[in-house]
Length: 452
Figure 1 (cartoon, rainbow, N blue to C red):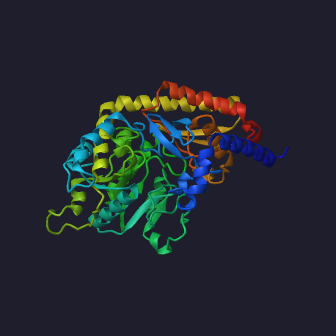
Figure 2: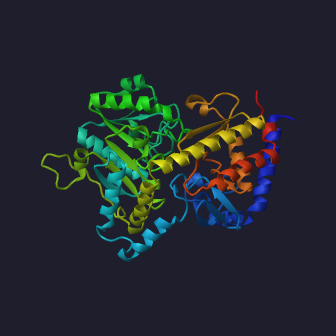
Figure 3: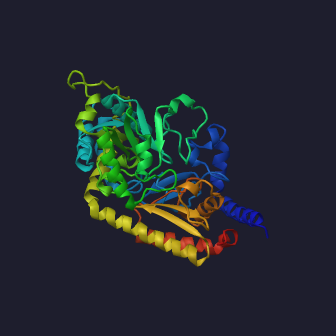
């Protein structure tokens, strides 16, 4: 039978099982798309044949509108490092409820800022925002103001939020990633190849204010690796030599790789860093942090002659988010380096065991890992950043949907990002592996994805 026919049969079977398991999600989708564009609040949340809708969550589990329970390994695309409704986070929100939803300069601002300056190596001063996109916008504005230069260097394959100026070069080219972005938006952003220091040297010029990057290279397939430390050290030295600021976009890696994020994990300190997601355990809070002299650009009391950067926002000190951050950051600090190492080691074993299961079924698979994050590829050839975008992701999406059919929300099918959390216990890890084996036995992935 032709490979396309086998793939079609596999899709039909997995879709049929999904429809039988989730009829209420089907009904909600048909209702939702009459008021929500695409039936969801963001493109990432949609997948075929229709998205899953949930009604509750606790710890490592989520429950859909049909009452089906799943082990959640997508973790809302990363923020739920502590799992859903962690007791310390819930208690902190409750303890601060009397302050109201949006008080003026709540004292919790200071409590959270002090926690961050304690945990994050580069964070001598911080400012709060709502989203990672806002944090990146602020970081780039601050870098330009402080240096008096206009250009920014980003790397191919790195995602830095939804601002027009950085929503491009998400693959190996300078292609803009969305309609509606004018070409002029990216003229002051140069690009280079990650881990290629010669490419960086060539891209830097006298008008470069900062280099920004995601230490995990997460958006394009988790190509940031533990052995990239040498590159980061050389990059740090080069930027200091050139008078260029170094910005770690830690929206993904912050409080996930280590209590101090990628800075602690790689032991390389940037000048500025951005955070969101895990900082408040999923509540809407983001951070831009950096050296005191750099952050003075947003300080109303800075000495005369200091460049003045406008940074503000009505919702920047929402009480619920700040209270959640106190609970989350305190817990990260208590877990410490040892707790993070144990989670990262668990994820390493899971990666090895899943790879062995695919090998046993003669399915050519590659699983990238950094810390507690994993990404899966099906390919008979070694996958790298350059050829990753030539792959057909249909089979990966079907595998994730098949895992959902068996009670494991390993990833949103269209996302391909797996995040293990402190809420996952040994039983969860074991069940993820046994379910992987069950799915490979139940559905004929091997017949579609033969090793060549």
